[in-house]
Image (cartoon, rainbow, N blue to C red):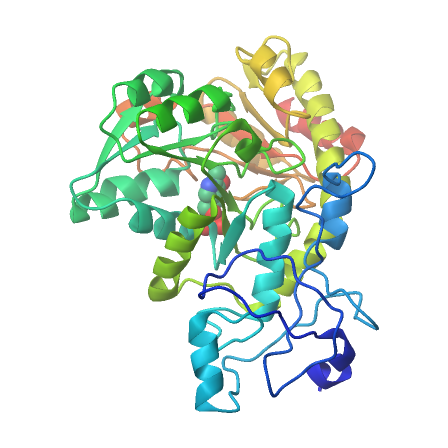
Length: 440
Ligand code: PLP
């Protein structure tokens, strides 16, 4: 029904090269032509690319986040329709063959590709300035598919010790069983580790979780490339408005889109974006692993993206205010926030980032004090995750880093009195009032 009412908006995609799904810029200039091709929509052209004009320029993130992935053309719907169908009709055997040859606008089965998911992929690619993007049912789905697609048994991954716990455990407990070796190094040792060579892939985060150290992305990407390794950054803590790793030379950027991209604490999703050849390799494996994104979630991601820039700007501003207040509070032993001049990577963060992100980590000294503080919070939620409208706090030793040995905690820079906070969209005055009463 929805599709019929949107008929005019769907245009037949031009004949394409061999099947290589990506972030093609698609037109909405023609009515559907079922006989000679598909009629599905796709995202708006020109956002991700340089825009023609007196001086070509890329549109700003706030604009891209509103318009990317939406249909274009005569009478097109303003929002992207949800194509809630597992499978798609073919009018003939010849059409299936055209699909197999890569004709654009044809779909077979939603585990392989779905128009709404494809629109959301185009949006994330546009935001990251990527050639291509593939979305998943979770951030860990994205990371698993990327590592399984790009690294084989017997090969080595150089990885920073300060990794999201799930990623670290994926390397330690799962991929190790398939012969993938992980060489864990301190984030500041990544450049040297890449220079030594021998690794297939260099995996890191910036800012790191939970200590918010900032890695020199450009230096790591350059050294990795020089040694023949693929660079893959988990940029979940610093979404596109704050940081654009691909522009700094990284091959692939991964997001738990569950967090700032979707931004509403209501769906799990993950993204891999970057060089087309690598993304398409990951997509090929993703289809076999099956952790793909559902069309309804893709729609909700697109809706979340409409307010992306507003949300993230506000979260960065509030996080800085809260971090400054925490730093001035006698009960707080240490604050990690790259926007504070005392942070060891403050200068690098100023050069590399645009704002300092919505995450603040601090320590109240001991496990007992952390538990007491945490239990006393009234407004701020005691919960895992980040990037949503609500301010959330977690204790790394109970959440992301549970099950780590004392030595693993030390190497990850996690102390037992540590609290990780994702600053939401509440008024910072109310947040500070709650933190104050919990610290008393
Ligand atoms: N990477 C980082 C930095 C995260 O914080 C998380 C989740 O908290 C993930 C990856 C995993 O993402 P998901 O929970 O969407 O699988």
